[in-house]
Image (cartoon, rainbow, N blue to C red; front, side, top):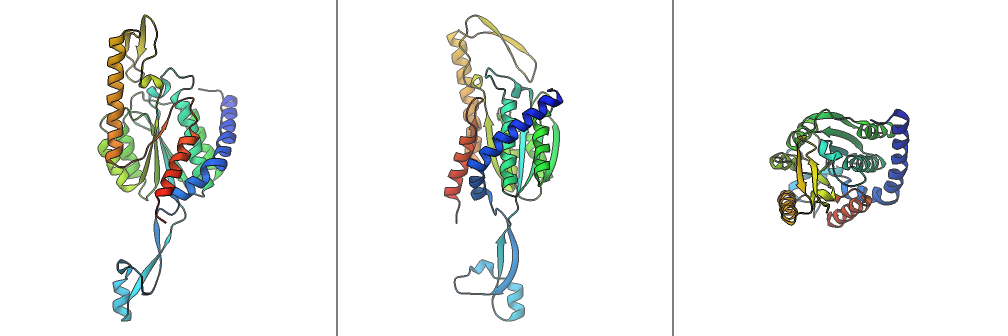
Length: 295
């Protein structure tokens, strides 16, 4: 774990860089996509030609003897929840920057986007258990606390129970929210929980992957490869064509399975790799969703 002074410097650096990215690139896109996702009852008024029949308030109409309609206004305040996979696999890989560090910076981007939009933000950190849940609130102080939690966090578990985390979000957050799930999504058995969550909330998967999850590095000789979550080590000849081909096939099938789940549930995923610009794919998603959002 980083010393307090190192952690403070890191938080400050991330705050400065992510705030600039949010203000310059993300805030407008976030606002246009996620504003007003709920409708609140405002008043009733007499029916006017062109009003939808579905908007008629039949109780008031019966009482007044003429048709009245319900008027709704967009709820301005939203709730944004960021769920982050902190299993041991987030620290593994061959990239210079660990997936866990990338995840923490994405958390900062999303939280600052929400707070810049005047919304409430919350955080869930999970492994094979619910490690930490901070309920949504507003304000800069709260946002910095969430980012500190994400950076300083030391998980107790090593494995991944994505289904349990998704289930926790479904029960903990009753009001409709925008839920960003930051994970490599390489766990099994989470499809049903994701389907339930996506029916209640606006879910955005943020897939953080390391290049080694797609293809083995080309190295000569036997190399010990550690399964970060199970702790098991196997020796592999990384230059052997059959080994490399079998691994690539396995990785491709695993990724295709994940993508099929997203397509089936009509979820648009953001894809990020360590070392890449992760502001650009988030901004691209916001722009794409904004263009499709009905006026």
